[in-house]
Amino acid sequence: MASHSLSKLSKIAAAVLISSFAVHSFAADLLDTVKARGTLKVAMEGTYPPFNSKDPKNGQLVGFEVDVANLIAKKLGVKAEFTTTEWSGILAGLAANKYDVIMNQVGITDERKKAFDFSIPYTLSSPQLIVRKNETRSFKTLEDLKGLKLGLGQGTNFEQKAKAVPGIDVKTYPGAPEYLADLASGRIDAALNDRLLIAYLLKNANLPLKPGAQIVGSVDKIGIPFQKGNPKFEAALNQAIDQIMKDGSFKQASCKWFGIDVSKEPTVASRDDHCPVAAH
Image 1: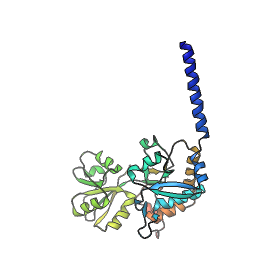
Image 2: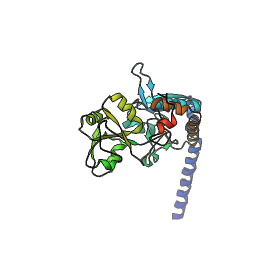
Image 3: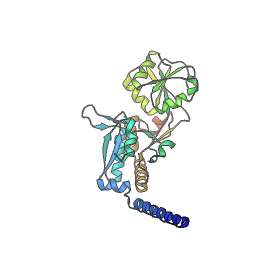
Image 4: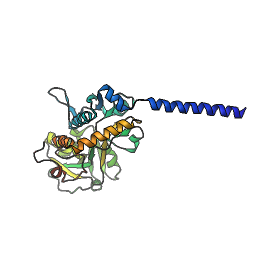
């Protein structure tokens, strides 16, 4: 009887396994869905300049990632269809199939790779300090800020990096305008943000501040997340990214928004090495 029950269970298990394989085999790869639809559904915040934001004149989405998404979609033979959503729920929206991909400077981390697949990196960045223009102290690393006050955005990966160094008095803020104002007034000693954002932030803040040292040895790889189990889409997406890197269109978009090629390893000399002098 026990043997018969075991045999019966084995048959049921085998049937379930075969069924699951069949479902997987007939499930459409995301590439097929995207091509049949004619659009690539792209999610972004729409409030994250210069990566993505709405033009105050006409409400249209503009920015580096808008341009890159359009370039990728064109290589896939479709059009980009944009959805804006808050960062706090953007990954959950992808998990719920509300869109195909996210392009919002999503860092490729081991934790996120458990839930999603990622494209090859299209942006490489690193943390960089911001200091007052009249700053005479030399801050080359985060360790140099022990015993001092460092401002940064609440909930960012920079907060984790700073708090990992004992002795830094980390002050968190809702956003860059608040900590830049405190830095200019002397309430904190330095601030920390993405090196790609700093030139843009300082230009628009119009405060007596300047870029400080890049944090060496800390490079963030940014990719495009999508649902697991779509090998054809993954191959096509990576091929599209590779093509726009090689044909110069990615570099053109990068130079337009940043004055540097953001696909290159962060270096102090990257502005002169990778972009025309007249860019941006």
